Image (cartoon, helix red, strand yellow):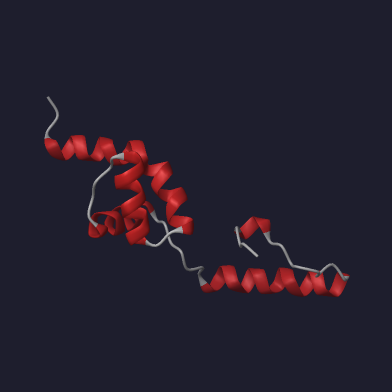
Length: 94
C-alpha cells in the first residue's frame, strides 16, 4: 500500500496538465478555487506554488525571451508586417 506522500505525488501527477494550463491564465488563488470546485482537488496556495516552481512553470518571461521578442518585432517592422506582431513561438497573447 502506498504511503500518503506517494499517493499525494500520484494525485499531483494526474492533475499536472490541468494545473499548468490554468496557471497560464489564472492567479494562484483562482487556480486553487477552480481545482477545488471543478476537479475536487484540494491543496493550499503554498502547495500549488511549490509544485509549479518544481515543474518550472513561470508566468513572467525571462529577459532572454523579451530580447528575442524585441528582435522578432523589429524584423517584422522592417518587413512591413507589423499590424499586431503575433509571436506564436513565445506564447505571447495579444
